[in-house]
Each structure stands twice: as structure tokens, then as C-alpha cells.
Image (cartoon, rainbow, N blue to C red):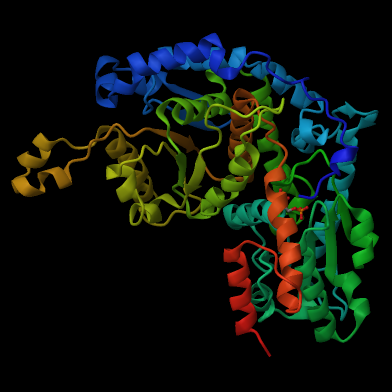
Length: 559
Ligand code: F6P
């Protein structure tokens, strides 16, 4: 995201700095010893054998999420040390600072207030003299009015026909949240309005999206926090050209384009009618924006009431995170276990495996949330870390994964802690398919943890030469999250759980989880390179590899 020029940023560096280096904190040192002396030898089978109640005691539950973390390479001692580390890193103070609206996004000099987007109407949070909750509610009200008119068919396109197709144009946080929520909440969606998501600047994306759409009944929502993102603005212009060509009148734009941005001026210059513009604020990070006006397509799909339910779910988890003691705090437990595996076991990745067709886009959404937030190696006080930060988050719909990459989870050489997510009830009964689905989730966590020994394999009459191939060592850790049912509310709790787990990890690693300077260089170079691809006379001063690639591209496109 384009941010303030560096010279405009008042850096409150050192305010949130931890003075003592992380690896010198006593809890870290104790964890290191605990790992070397005991934990690296932990065997889940044995841990379960010596503690018959482990499966129930290493679990936490609130706001509708039951988190079973017993299948982790951790004991009560490990958890106590991890929570001690969280305390020594000032986690609660940092949580309070975020919720209060302090400028904890140090490098951009901004507060981090996505939690204010979900605060109930009528509550207050004053930041820089403004009650931000009132501002949020004002925009929500306008969104509701707009969404209702589109959903009911009152909002008419340029030729007087109601909207039946909505295309969200945006990328990163302006795409992944709305797209994930659309998939997740399809069951609650209005079936006679179809939703489309356009993010890629590849012209094929737009062409394939609009190919079968009737322009008269199509609404484009241009979502961009900055309204300067090249991909989004290029697509928005192309979509506008398409619309005008289809309807033969430039005036059609005001009935077919809405905008969501913090940059109202730029959106107005593009030609979006101010009545169709929905604002948000620089204290909402792109990857934390799905509950801002960026959720307009979600609201059109599921309706304002369901959208309020989604917000209620987020808020419930926000409050849990803010108030629950670390030992019972779901995001803290999840976050600290990630720290445990990344920093002590050297795990380089974490897999997210939802057992729900509806959550198939959740791993993609979480990739941005986790890695754009914590994929950093400089601390808030400008020092290079001497420990690992964000693991790679990846995953897919669990059942599909079982038939592709689970082989590696079970028998590969890398330790990949997994998050399994499942629901007790299906949204619609379809024979015993839900039982079958969930049986797979439970079975996988069991297989990963306890494996299958050579003795068992031999006992099945396996030829000796195949025995090593058929052994499962087990001892592969996982969390299981079990939720009653996928609803707007429970989706809110789940996403907020991950948001706050990311926050927890960022506090421990002492990094700013809310900037994203690492995306800037590529953007600048792409701009320069684009002009060299368009104008073949421009000299090339890249490295020899990039020069050769560009020359080859130019040769292919020589007219
Ligand atoms: O380039 C990364 C990024 O800035 C993300 O942080 C953001 O979600 C995305 O681009 C889109 O930005 P915008 O909403 O300003 O178009």
C-alpha cells in the first residue's frame, strides 16, 4: 500500500520497544533450555499416556470456538513458559495500546484500529479528538442503505434495469477479505446477485470476468485503500471503458460504479459519484479491512443484518483477546504456539486446513494476513532480529489436501504444525456427508500425532521391504478448532482469532505487524520496467539476467 512519504512520518520509535533483547529475556532462556533438555524429545504418544486428561485439559473455549491444542509438542510447563514470555514482552500492554488507539504502527506513525470497525453502535472511542465509532457507524449506515437498494432491485442501472452482478475490483486486502467472505458465507448469500472478484492486472482476468456479464445489470465496486494501486486502477479504467462501450454513454458510470477508499479525492477524479463512495481511515490496514467499507460486496451478498452478525463475531473475539488471561486466551495460545515452533523447533511453515468447502479461500486470505504482517526482520527499534519471524502460512481445503500434499505432512522431512478447522453441524444436511468429512479431519489429526509403528505394520503382514515405507512416525503437531456451525458470527470470531494471533506473534518478535514496506521496491521497479516494455527504444540498465529477459520479451513483441 502506498504510504506517507518517509519525511512526513513522525516516528514514535522506542515507545513500544522492548529494551531487553528477546533472546535474553529469562523466559526465552528458560524455553531454550526446556526445548534442549526435554521438549525436543517429546513424544505425543507418551505425553498422552502419562496424562489421561491431556485431551481435555489442553483445550480452551470461548465465543463459540473450541481450541484443542493437546496434540502439540508441549506440556503444561511449556505453556507456562510461553505465557511468561508473553508477559515479559508486555503483550497485555500492547493489546491495551492497540485497542486504545495509540500509534503502535511505528513506522507509519498510525494507530491500528480495525477493532473499532466492529465496536457496537453507541459505544465511544475517541482518537485525536474524534469519536471513531460514530464515524464507522455513519459509513455502515450508508453502506446498508446502498446494499438494501441494490439487493431489493431499487437501485437501477443506467438503462433502468436492476443490478444482478457485482464485480469487486481490488487486490490484496481489498480483494482477499471480500472474496474469502463471499465464499465462506455463500449459504447466506442472495442467490440472484452473482459476485465476481477482479484483482489481476492480466487483461485476461477482466475479459474472462465480463465476457458473459450484461453491462446494464453490472455494478463495479472499486476497492482500494489508497486508490493508487496500479493493478486496481488499471482494471477500474478498463472496466469503465468496457461499460461505456457496452452502454454507449459515459453518463452510465455513476449508476454502475461505487468506490471504497480512504482517498476520496482520487476516487472522485476517476469519476465515482460521491454518493456511491464509502470511506474508511488510514488506521485500518489493508489486510485488516474486511470489516470496513471494503466489505461492501459482502454486505450486498449477505445483507446488512448478516453483516452486523459478522461484526458481532469479530467484536466478541476482540473482547475475548482484550480481556481473557493469556492461559485461556485463544489468539494468545495460537500465537505463542507458533512462536514455539518457529523459534525453538525451527519449523518454517504452518498449514491451515479447513474441513469446509466454504472456507476454501481462508488459507489464501491468511497468507496475506500473516506474512504481510510478520514477514519482517527489523525490530521496531530498527535492529536486525536474531531469531525467525513469520513462518510460511499455506494450506487448502483439508479433504483436497489429503489427496495431494498430506503425504509430506505425514512422512516428509519437515515439521509442519497444522491448524485443523471444522464445524459440528453442516449448513444443510446431505446424507451422512458431514460425518464423513469430519471423520477425516479427526482421523488426520490422530494419524499425524500417533502414526503407525513398524510393529503394527508388520502385524498386518506387510512384506519386510515395504515396512519402512509404510511406517508413520507420528509426533507431528496440530491444533484442532471446532465450531458449532459456519455463520457470519462464527466466521467473524475465526478471522479475528487469526488477526490477534498475528498480533501476539508480532509483539513477541518486536516487529511492526502493520506496515508493509517490503512490497514497495517491486512496485517501483515494475513501473520503470513497464515503460521499457512499452517503449523498446529505452536503454536497459538492469543486471544481465533482467536485461536478457526484457530483450527476449521485446523480440517476441517486435512489430
Ligand atoms: O501492495 C500491498 C498492498 O499495499 C496491501 O497491503 C494492500 O492490501 C494492497 O496492496 C492493496 O492496496 P490498496 O487497497 O491501497 O489498493
